[in-house]
Image (tube, rainbow, N blue to C red; front, side, top):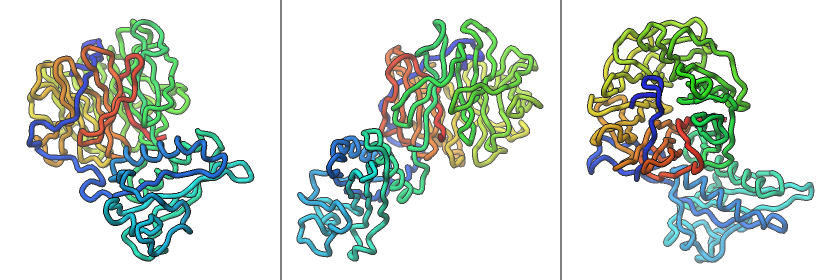
Length: 461
């Protein structure tokens, strides 16, 4: 896909139902927790007194967080016994199927490996407090079956109940999966909502589930390709200052406040597609300072820059392996762009994709083992879909989306948990929107609906 810095215009995005390429993918991304997922029986939590009015929001949030984590098999509530424990003191060694014994949940029809239960109440000092418990139903001794029990206080409001549900879910996810919880992450993207000028865009931010969308910047330009620093504190991006400026530059802001940081742009018609190094001290980017675009490295303020590549094909979109700073990806090609790999000195260049179609938008997984990217493999020019390549076995691919007609899927970025991917999609020539899915192409969810929304990037808070 030709980037806007090369041809001066934005490409739109695409849609898809998440299916694998053909019937025999070259490999399958192993989603954490698959193949023997913990089977959770999550009761409907109740609240005492004033807490009860907030329990619907609490239960909906808890179940959504656990389901979206992709770590668990949530057992159908229609299979649950009529009675269930609210407090740990409700558990009994034997209960003949009434619902207060752990074995009532371990056997048919529930077949749960773990029971999640508890209750909420409002304390005398005016706090909404959840008592949350997780027990292993396969262990006969009640005390030995307890995995953890904890109290979660917050405000006596619906927002407080939702925060408590997020916190409880995050602890469950950490206990079982050992992965970074999405609850501590945010998605940044560009949008033309509240922007200046016909083609203006600003950076927006939202929670990992699409909630609390708000504008972060007021830069009054056209913005593309945001990237986030490893510690989540900064965003770097391509910007055309003023909606009609022909020369893209690199900008940098605080990911929390949107406040601009100084960045020195060397004299060039193009400075664009920045990315941070894993230690957060340097920026890699594409620049035409040497006439034809090449990949450069600079300190985080843009100073002390040096050229890494001397290659043909307008190299752009540099990306550094988060676990191996000596392994870099970039995109180049005059007609059919492809993804290439090189070392940190710009040597050892080799093509990663197979040369078919157009390939762009590479994104490393957090463990540095996989690369998600957009590719026109098997489709007419410009009809991109999201694929994943196993970096240890080049030429082995898994297709995550499938678009036809005017559907396009582009700009994938991995979540910090290494399980989810965010991307942008355009359907039937409509406005591009932001979606998420699991890294095996399932559980596709649309997060934005208003305006034109592009270039998502997932970062920690």
